[in-house]
Amino acid sequence: MDYKQLEALDKQYLWHPFTQMQDWLAQEPIIMAQGMGNYLFDVNGKKYLDAISSLWVNIHGHNRVEINEAIIRQVQTVSHSTLLGFANVPSILLAEKLVAIVPGDLVKVFYSDSGSTSVEIALKIAFQYWQQIATPQRNKTKFISFKNAYHGDTIGSVSVGGMDDFHETYKQLLFETYEAPYPYCYRCDSSESRCSNTCFYKLETIMKEHHEEIAGLIIEPRIQGASGMITSPPGFLKQVETLCREYGILLIVDEVATGFGRTGKMFSCEHEGVSPDIMCVAKGLTGGYLPLAATLTTEAVYQAFLGEYNEKKTFFHGHSYTGNQLACSAALASLDLFEKDRVIETLQNKIALLTSLLVPFRDLCHVGDIRQQGLMVGIELVLDKRSKQAYGWNERTGISVCKDMLDKGFLLRPLGNVIVLVPPLSIAEEEIADLLENLKQSIIKVTGI
Ligand SMILES: *Cc1c(COP(=O)(O)O)cnc(C)c1O
Image (cartoon, rainbow, N blue to C red; front, side, top):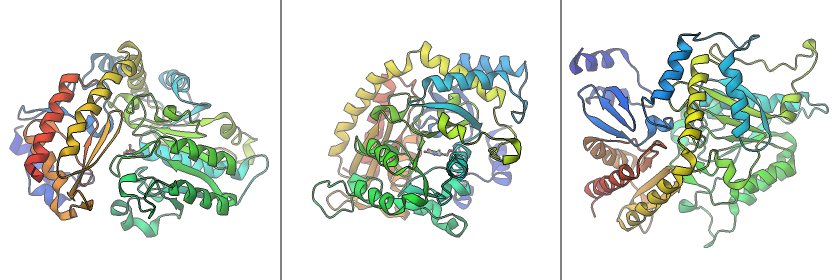
């Protein structure tokens, strides 16, 4: 089938995620056909450096033979059998491996298939925990969430989200949370000239006043991804953990975007020695090959769900494809590659290079802020650098920059007017240099010097 036929069929039958389909119908879509290493190829043979890791999931590049072979071996054994009431081999091996590499005291693994479901599970577990611990605290039914947070698109995960553009529409469907400010230092709304830790004090106030009704707090550790790569100052996550302990609130860390090396350590929590009660992982878990997620908990959380059958302390949750063998096999192969390729070790020079190459971007007239955690980067473009005035939603400046990059063979997708770079961990230093040089030219071309 040629491009024109595929395009027509796509436009006839598909509804794309987070996409205004009216715009989609008016443009020529890029139709991917193949992946190899850090590159994707469309059906017309055009090559793109996958600078967003296919939306932050890819880790070791596309078409890695080790992951392919693990999946093929598993297909030839069994592709899926249920985890409801039965066990399977790859899910056992993967759970052991995950517990060995995650931070803190997380010792139990509950599988699902997307970041959103891993968050739903975390919320339900935290809620149910307080209802059935030895001394139940039945009023602990609420959550603390953060401004600009993103935890997925299902109703529970949207309820703890804080992105007005995405979440406002569904407001009447959502449960209410106590929303704390997340430090967005570039656009700090405090009137003080120097940081007075307002975010921390506001969070502390919420906890002080309401801790008796709060079951858990959910946070993206050290960087909020989807809202524009908003990095919190070092130490903030640790302060959040300390407050949670002080006020008896379960700490849920959403490592869906940050997990598996993306920030330069295996998990973002490790940068601050934080031990969550519950942790969500998804995106990079299978190296970006198959949908798989996990919600990990401590022994104490798990223990609250043990009881006689008729006590109904069971965790009543489970998806059809929970613990899927193909996905778990891909994840095992991906974790093996972390060891074999010494990924975390070799990552450090790449991160340092990226940091140094971002420095000259600060001189560009319309680059307001540059934020980075490891291989996650956000470059915030602004209309006016001095007043920090944003570009209008309609100007689509971020989209124009990414469009120019696409023409040159770099696959990017912005978050509003924040240009996002999340390359695979396997990106080479020359590719980083090439990517940044081209990006600088595209920003200048679109926004002017
Ligand atoms: C992407 C993301 C999610 C949602 O994951 P899906 O697999 O898209 O459902 C949740 N939390 C964070 C921090 C994310 O970046």
